[in-house]
Image (cartoon, rainbow, N blue to C red; front, top):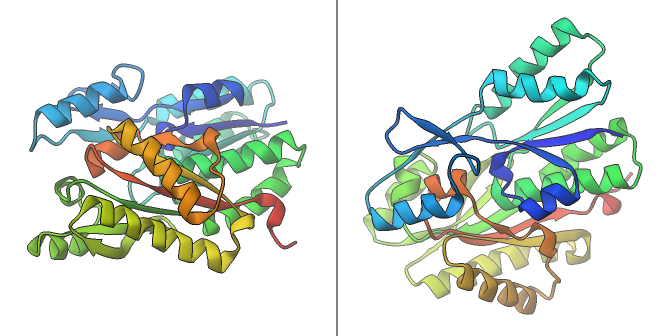
Length: 294
């Protein structure tokens, strides 16, 4: 048996985290660039969204968990001889992976027998949650840690987020989409964005919100059809507008002909909201570990 952890960018629900014994390491958010609060500990998701909506043009900042935070959490389990697997948000977006690795090095100096695996999920929000969910499923199926880690690399390669946003401003301010955002903003359109292998790219453009969501559905459908829909788990992530999120879930199931994994549908959290704005919405997919070719 092994302990599964993740930084808070995974956005898994409190219910899921408790049910599956996941330890969450909070990232940090700041409204003034100096005083940082722990994600979902010192401030709630809804409080951050409300501040952003009430103050257009206001851009909070995020920061990574400290080495000390990771060290203390790892040590709690390694002192008991329990192997640890820790997932982090894509390295391209945050230094969370490096912070966790530095903490691992400190633990190993003191305890060379400690077993700690730090995994760059190469994802964020809903697909980071799906990556973790695959590890949970393998753990609960009794798959040895070494074998689960071998499968994990291929599972991460299969994962994708297909999404759109309400405004490009947040992506531009955070430097998250660079030339894509700059080009789109000049002609007043918004992108359909695809996240894979740790980075994000353009999957289409449009102006109308509903048409953009249709484009998201089409891009996701193309990928799943090529790879085999039955081989994948699909979930939805949504921003401030929960009603839109529920409606979109129904549209995804009807249009793609899939059943969503409701456990890993997520209310997109603080870290992603800061960089995508209050109205991101999209689809996350990952291959089922059982369908990997041996």
